[in-house]
Length: 192
Image 1 (spheres, rainbow, N blue to C red):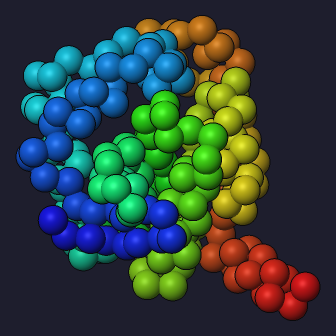
Image 2 (cartoon, rainbow, N blue to C red; image 1 turned 135 degrees about the vertical axis):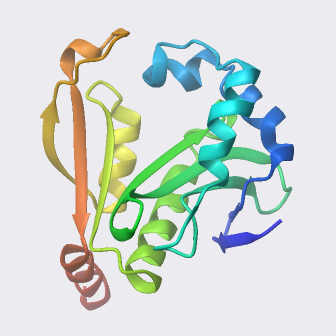
């Protein structure tokens, strides 16, 4: 399995077809899926037929994929996944940051650690100019991760969702970070 990057506690690696069971288990936890679809599990057929092709897709503009399986470095245990996905097929200028982790991996900083590493890699190794991340307004835990990584609140918006879930009446939020703001933040951290 191809390792994309490592952090002190995480390995982000390319997905393989053998990850279907991990993904089905992850998406079967109502708490994990709460802010995705209201807590409904993703059927195995959908994981195999629709989700896996997205996770296995390579982007020429990055020379790699946009999704990576996250494993605990010390044990190799599957924790979930991270997304650093170009919004345009042929340009890495704007990427979307995302993550979905097992409930037993919440609250220990994995989402922040993996996200920081992806942001750093995007701004140093790729031609990323802006990182964006979105979640439901009521998803305070995910919003906290975005802020810890250095993204700032940009806007609240209301989509026309076919299946509204509890909390969707408050809308979605977008957070962003530009390359110039990231460079400025890093300079402040090293000077301070």
